[in-house]
Length: 595
Image (tube, rainbow, N blue to C red):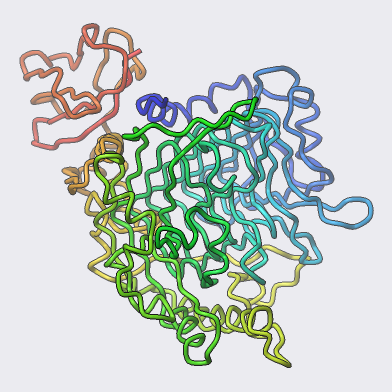
């Protein structure tokens, strides 16, 4: 089981762990029914609740995360499961007095951190709840190294207007089965109409997901301030990456999309989106862009001034649509049905012709996004390049390819029944492409979950194993631990490279051997004010200090490193990278925060 200051975002991520461990107490919660809620009621916030690996924590009520239960403003709920390579601590949704499943596990009004947990939204009868949590105020949410399965039949996270300004950090998670997969209108990960300050989604795998990865208010007012979606794997997703057209800044890099937008589109559905049938715009892309405007309390509309300062960086992504998925538009054409098309990353001349059931002579002319991206005068900071289609990843788990057949049968039968009105057709009885491993193993619902591991996303295509912007595998790097360690060794530099809209490849200099050796190197204190000490078994040759833009700001040779002490009082506050070279010619990069 499994206007915006970019520097402040990177700094916020760096401090996620310290924010957790600085709580005054750690309380180990005994497993059982209702024990977690009882512990929170007794102890409130400013506490780290430690949950035992493999243990079960059943909910007797929805867990209220607010100033009352956490005993004071500014408190946060922090739940941390024990580190394990096996089944983590399990938190399972409960039932109301009438037997119905609770709509959420968490009702959130204050900050919350979840780590190393299995979150199950399925009761003992196998009935899934609506979602995992509802956000009801501007909060900070940190979810790391969790498995969410099932992730709800509606929206895994629902946040409406009261949650405007929330910050969301979602990293290293495995999310299975959000949405009911019976049709295209079945929710997704982020639901509701909240406008987030930050959505940071990195190194996750999303399997069998719903309509919208990020939902929102279509294309009216300016939406989310900053979205970062990097190194994620998406498999069998219903329709959209995001429905919001007017996000301030959007970075979508190094992602692997397998059978994305499985519910093929009809022209008629385009009426809900900008410029439908006007100016020749008939085709919807995953890279949704529109000009922004705002409406004040008096109803006065202010249009975005051009050239726009908004940023979009859609680079180094793969969209692989299986042969089964591409049979859906073909079925429509061969049976004289309504024209259907699969949504590509962008309707331009790179979009595959077999994504549509009709000839597309000039795809870019049918796409408002392609026209916007071609206009470098008015949209200078929006970049779309270095993306690929239809390269088979070659998954090591054969069940993924087997489930492609199930996906096709379910979807085509939905079209036959609901859209095409074929007499006598029923919803397919083929096995659902929901990744329900316990069902395959015959585990009774009352014993759920049992099967571990839940999923394996590792693949073998050598071309894709170095296709990311930093020469690493596309998609979730958790399936490639050694390569993820290399990425982590220079994570700050890679982030700065992408945030600067640099489309060229970034070269990681740290090898796997160096990463293993680097475990014996540390900097103290960090963050620091004036002096730092480098703790290392080897003597040091030199230390170079770079800022986040890659500029060299300090260089120290061996004669200045006798005691491995460095005076950094002359540096401005911020984040820096130390390039350390030892006497045995080992080099390593470390992050330093000057405060």
